[in-house]
Image (cartoon, rainbow, N blue to C red; front, top):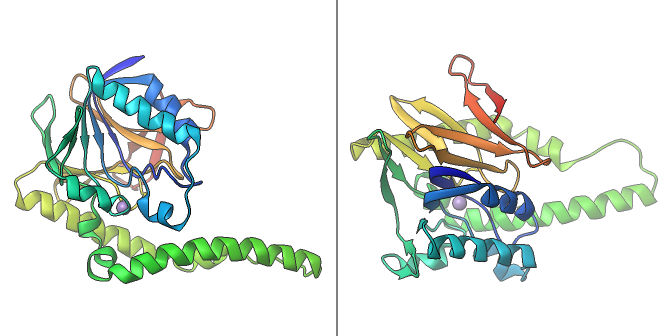
Length: 265
Ligand SMILES: [Mn+2]
């Protein structure tokens, strides 16, 4: 087991089929931390309202976190929009788990980092709540429809390829602008509060870079990317990704071209 100062995890989405619980479990076994930050969308209460899905692996993850909390790890939970039901417990502690709306984490080398989920900087979820609920539902429906459509097309022997991915690609440019707006807004919020940077989640886009002079770190998610942020005992921050073979990779951002590069650790 590797000893680190802090672990930051966001967008686990327990309670959904998309959650890669086995990879997260392998990761949690690998690391022992003084601080564990749960940066929102840990339990997907939205999805659970539509149909209960709770396999034993998801229970194991909750148990594993609670066990860490009972021992030497301080666990801090910042609820996100998918677990907003938990926001009514803000200010309370459950065992050694503190539920807070945000937190200021000071690294070993004195950097002040604002820990937030980030949905407050998402124009869509903040100002058009009904759209984001609709969007969530539409996506689930589209995935189901795509499956049904391909069966029908196969039965009718329709050749050619149609997919949701192509449809999504047409929206890529819009998505890029959305991510840029989100990053700038989150950094602005942190800078107004005299922070050195922000650690957030929400948009499922793992990255570590400098935006307008501040550190912008997004933990990513455990749905597609399987990434986490760690603070080593010397205060350095890394974004790491677990591959399907459970190998851990460090993600480096090269600022010149914005491309991610991976290095095995
Ligand atoms: Mn979210």
